[in-house]
Length: 250
Image (cartoon, rainbow, N blue to C red; front, side, top):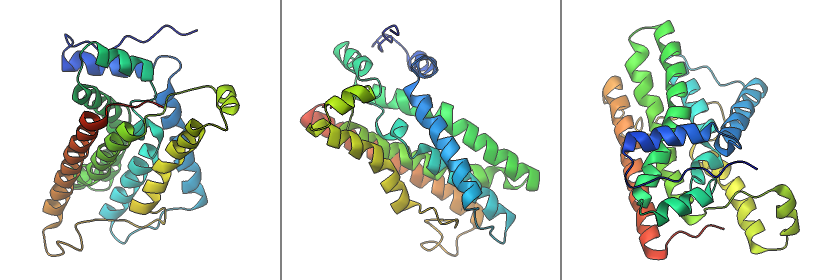
């Protein structure tokens, strides 16, 4: 038996909550890290099976690699089920008076530290090794999928918070409605990923067609802004859903 995780407290500052969240993520049973690790392995295996198409420009290749890993690794329940993976701790935190906004923000920042920073670091190293001027542009470009996925994940986390249970218990409950929800919450992130970023080895710049004449560096800054906007809107929608129906953990 693992000790019960310490719930968040209204008296904790934002930095304390984020540090505790990162520490909890690396504490057994490490449900978040299991999903991240599994997707890192899947992304590498798929990259070996189907190499990415190499754009004509080195800048595009660096962005493509960073975006590929950012979106693939985050296409997991670690992003879309942040409230169900540690359901007991979330319930206790809400009971203590911690707002859902604070919980989501804490978990989002912890994910950015655990997944986002290594991804951005890899992208920055690749960009700087090819050309020092690529450093800033690559970071802005890869920030877009990171923030977008967190925003969408917050909505799905409130709509479909599925509690972690053993496979034996899932088997015994296989005829119940919760089994359908469990399968759906596992498959949904990958389905969304395929729709917004198909695994076809091509680079997708959502502003390229809308703003074809804008300066390249400015376009990447706009991309980061769009990602931030998606995260803000997604979080606002998640909070509105919570105010309307509360948090249902299945």
